[in-house]
Image 1 (tube, rainbow, N blue to C red):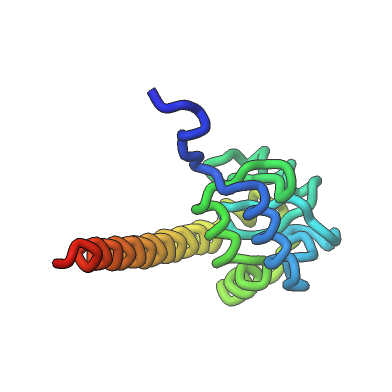
Image 2: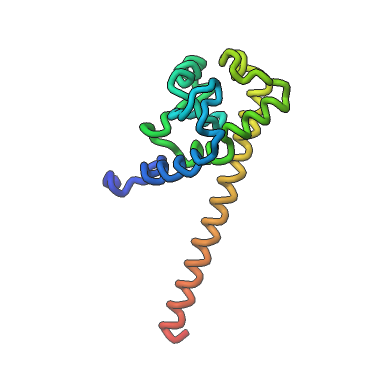
Length: 162
């Protein structure tokens, strides 16, 4: 059995999480709650890739995790998939999508907004983008790892006089 220090966590480090959110919060749209006009939201829905205030986070949590998975930007642990959803999403992108699909009142009741066909389609589209992005990143990482291994093997052969 592996010792705890050797077990790889499925969560990103707190430092990486902080750095990612710091960068993403530079977007002015992400500094206002997606569901209300409250400033400086500290919660997020990784399902929709949007930033929300504490009050709206409570409302979304009541909808259930099958509708929206809500995390604290500062206190909770985040998986790479959840962070990728935030990178690919954001309040601006979600607002544009909802408005383009006929949802003009973004401050409507959360149960109405997040159970709508527009929300289901957006959630599905975002999830596909996350899956594709992570597959590309994994492929690039695998190629880099393979290239490093090939370079190391070449050095070994050179060192051995082969």
